[in-house]
Image 1 (cartoon, rainbow, N blue to C red):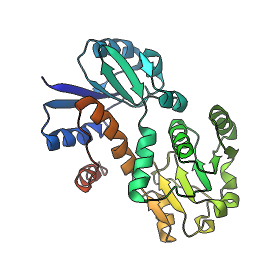
Image 2 (tube, one colour; image 1 turned 60 degrees about the vertical axis):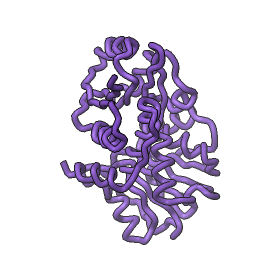
Image 3 (tube, one colour; image 1 turned 120 degrees about the vertical axis):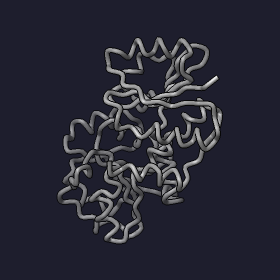
Image 4 (tube, helix red, strand yellow; image 1 turned 30 degrees about the vertical axis):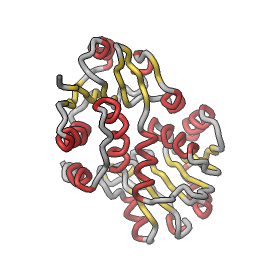
Length: 276
């Protein structure tokens, strides 16, 4: 019997998850399918009825449903609870379990692209205080980063997020970047700045230590202005595409019983779609 999985969102046509999972299904010769399904917020409860009926082994959740599915899951793991969002669903005996693999995607991407990046990391700058930032803050705390500075255009939003998470998170406005930069071994952009050619005004990346790592979760374009500027200064960079690929691994393993690998061929397949 074909094992079925999905990604739900509204809209959903932009999702590259079917291509990622479809590539792995073909690679491993599985009797399985993975499809993109457009589900509006009003349709979510009915979709969960389909899940509990056993139609699917599970699937992924994307915008705008990552928070809304919390109330519909039968159980949510502690990590997803602390992140405040669910992006992966697993069905077991008619029960729907929610988890979040974004933090694993973030860590897996940096571990692959800059091995040893977290060893002795004292200070990290995280830019942006939206939903993605929460998963990344939790990920950094799991690596025992000494100090995390959260920069956001609207300081109140960042202060609310920092207050909801344990650990050493301080908050400042974007204008504080140049002051903190000399101390930072890692800069992470979790905001949408970088899409459509947008850039941070006033960030002087030359103030960063030569050993600093700069990463961006935006992957369209693959090289954002932030990463281009960092590379021009000879700084280490890791783009955002790997996060998308690595976060898909745990779900695939849970649904289909095979742990896939993120390899150059898969990355090339997804990269080829990024201009479209």
